[in-house]
Length: 170
Image 1 (cartoon, rainbow, N blue to C red):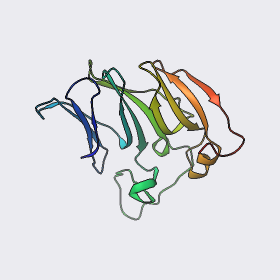
Image 2: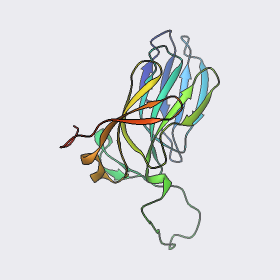
Image 3: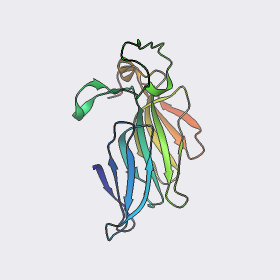
């Protein structure tokens, strides 16, 4: 697996098992016995426990989004049915090209998208147990990273811009 993370509260471990049609979040108890699993329609780029160990945040790039960083730069692809000669048409608004902030609740075993449809999340980190700081842009293309802003998102998905830099936030 990738992105192994230990719970701050107990012996549980979370990690991601990559797959061509999406990554699977795995959670194991202290005895390395699988306790939960959820497959997402995308590739998990970031995984972090909440400080109280009750939730996980994930940044998930849709199948089709460009991948960068330590994995090297390449475009992922969505499995589509049809003949090989069928052309790929991209309008730039495809939902599978965005990076989304997800919240996984360990108590219920449910995951849900927290980020807004027009927000591309580049990075995320917990700010206590009830808020998440994100580096975000209003576009998913790689150039949008250079005009990204800092925002806080609460557990209901309400986003508040905290800082818009004059230069690149990095």
